[in-house]
Amino acid sequence: QVQLVQSGAEVKKPGSSVKVSCKASGGTFSSYAISWVRQAPGQGLEWMGRIIPILGIANYAQKFQGRVTITADKSTSTAYMELSSLRSEDTAVYYCARDMATVYDYWGQGTLVTVSS
Amino acid sequence: EIVLTQSPATLSLSPGERATLSCRASQSVSSYLAWYQQKPGQAPRLLIYDASNRATGIPARFSGSGSGTDFTLTISSLEPEDFAVYYCQQRRETFGQGTKLEIK
Image 1: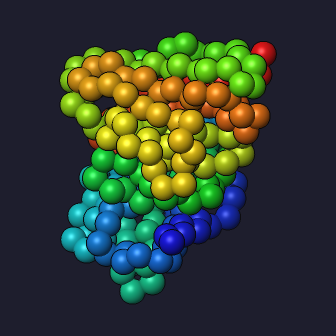
Image 2: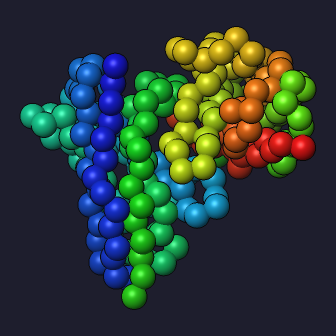
């Protein structure tokens, strides 16, 4: 049984950065990808990017190119998503999910990031 | 970029009724379509993958159909716990805007 546990809620100032972690247990961390999806309050789901830990290769949605960095530490089975130059519109719940080529079958519990001055 | 359009935006039904949710793609996605259920304050949960396959532990009242550009999620007889928001997704990236299934 795969479990993804994310870091806790964050409050950030506009212009700053946030780094959210996602620790995996169960399964083999390096054998699948991890994607990050966000959900603004009352809104739908938006894919941000993914990483394949075994390769260390990440790709990003065009909307977030240049602002988001996704990394993975195979030694601790943890993926990270860092978003920079935060603005109020980045206030959202950020989810990590196990990415199995055509679906996301396991999700983290979500991390609320609030951007406010 | 492929756009997924879900309809209706809101569906009001009573427990025991049949629910039919639609997802239309702007171009063919073959059978690479998934459905998720999301309840307030919770992460999405995978229901259906590859258009018609139920994920592990998903009750048989949930079924998916379609291919190409038109897809349907059917809940044969609604249970109280089925009232939630449902999203379709293609190839792990693009999501539909969601259908809210509410109690009538």
